[in-house]
Image (cartoon, rainbow, N blue to C red; front, side, top):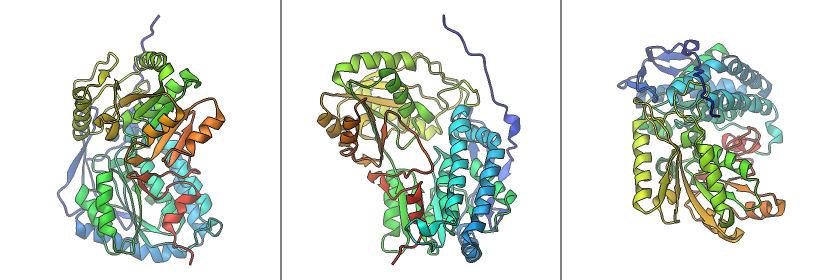
Amino acid sequence: MIFEYAPAPESRDVVDIRPSYGLFINGEFVDGSGTPFKTINPASEETLAEVATATEADVDRAVQAARKAFGVWSALPGSERAKYLFRIARIIQERARELAVLESIDNGKPIRESRDVDLPLVAAHFFYYAGWADKLQYAGYGTTPLGVAGQVIPWNFPLLMLAWKIAPALACGNTVVLKPAETTPLTALLFAEICQQADLPPGVVNIVTGAGETGAAVVGHPDVDKVAFTGSTEVGRLIAKSVAGTTKKVTLELGGKAANIVFDDAALDQAVEGIVTGIFFNQGHVCCAGSRLLVQESIAEELMASLKRRLSTLRLGDPLDKNTDIGAINSAAQLAKIRELSDSGEGEGAERWSPACALPDKGFWFPPTVFTGVSQSHRIAREEIFGPVLSVLTFRTPAEAVEKANNTPYGLSAGVWTEKASRMLWMASRLRAGVVWSNTFNKFDPTSPFGGFKESGYGREGGRHGLEAYLKEIS
């Protein structure tokens, strides 16, 4: 018997979205000098708010506010900075429902994910780095902050990426100018209100909104001492070139094309859940998504049958419905990219499959999609799709699995499914990936460092290692 899920929508009334938003500079919301832009709900295409655009002059105001605040903030004892971070963490917990709803409205991700994954991790990062603020001498990276950190974050995890960057920067005594993605600025602007609520000294955190030009102004400002960027490899290359020859410290967390490797001794039901989490979590808008499934040839048929049954139970629709598994694609531009790459998969001879799935009439939607018969030369096996699209390849031996997994310009993450600990360790030592998950996927913790190799960037965020990028090297 098949049971239908009754609608279980979360209330939008917990969020008060203003008609328009300014920039957050020196502890206050101010007008921007550029042409305002609109942020929309990707599930309905309705306009949510008008948001200010920061010009180079606005960015300069923000950087100067951060520079002035740096003298005061960096002089505070670590225990005092920790109090502010603890306060911010507690306010995030208190306002978690409001933040989760706003994130789902502005981003398109299911409320179940923003509520149960994103927000707990956001608070956890502030709690974790608050604990480090008065213990920097034990981290091994020195205790002297760099100065002003210019931070540019993506649209897939707007609030979580903010936490990854702001929390360690503040704990180390730096001040911040942060530029959120133009399609998802609202939770960053709500975080600005939380900074006011926490009585954070003016200028310690500044938030400037806009498109790529605003981000370039932040990165290129001569008074920015540290650049932190999460986003596409293409933009990462431009940033690396722009800061070359300067004294700016840089961390880049870029694209990925992760391999999720399943051996014939794996617990298949568990592996299927990990495959689903690896690629269909957040509509595949995950830089470390397990977008390449490498399955041992002897179990490929059985695994694919089980995976297709599981995908047929996923529910696509309203991101604010607590039953929803697959939400909306973040933007029309991203949807067009996903469609183009998926069409190329069919054009190059791979077999495409999606479960029966009714797509809403409005908004940006793409069904969970699986490609079999994929070769390593196919674009869908090499290029980052950043959507709910899985490419399936097979292998016979562990050595072949390693060769295929590493046959990519990226090196951000990988997953290995096996009951043999010796095989797991053998694989992990040979995979060129910053994170290797064992019998799980997409598991994050603030105490664990995250970052990549090759075209996935350099530097680490999270854990003790995440402090290094915000402190001057010990001489």
